Length: 267
Image (cartoon, rainbow, N blue to C red; front, side, top):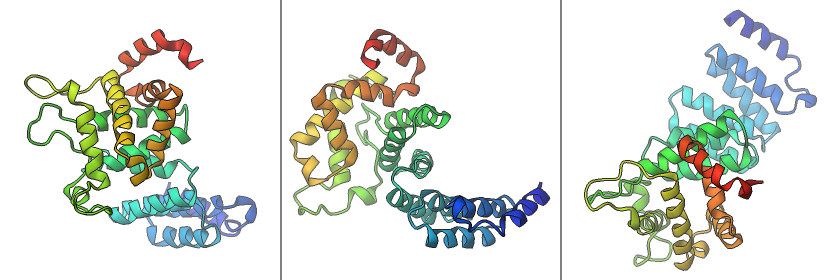
């Protein structure tokens, strides 16, 4: 197999810069070297391509993927985040940020980037995967009934950042966790800890959240594309349907029952 990758790289060498291939020429050649476990040769190719195509989301992704393989985790995420900024419509960078952060302390970024991904890529295997990851990540971060630390979307370093509005104001991360906590109070059990919220409970939590977030003035204080979208959907009366779609693959049985009952809303 290594020989085949070497032959493919040799065939691509004379043509990978051809403008007809756009950024894919650099990606294909770099991929050949990656498949031969030779990031020392792939990284310069991706960087060369990025000089020529600075808004290429796929080249940012490849640089991040190569960095991840080399154990440079922070650098990988930096490349992927830059990729979302360079080419916002390219979904793969969002996909890997969401997937890679879902089991870490940085769940807040996982759920944001995952939701953005689902709005960019529809009806694929990855769509189903990220829908399930979003549901699992949200419910894993909410241990309702835990009297010590019930909401865990952010590490302490994010929660401890000073607010740009002064010491008496909550920063974004703290405001987010606080509003999630107050929006889910109705689901706190009399005893014990909720193992998992249902999709219906999560939808209700997020509906309550966006109302409270807007009422507190946070839409203006902390501009956020996702929350602006939720506020718009709430005003149009479609937020619940959107959220059910978002978490649909988290619990297929619950999803099926809901869609059968409300299929007319999705025509």
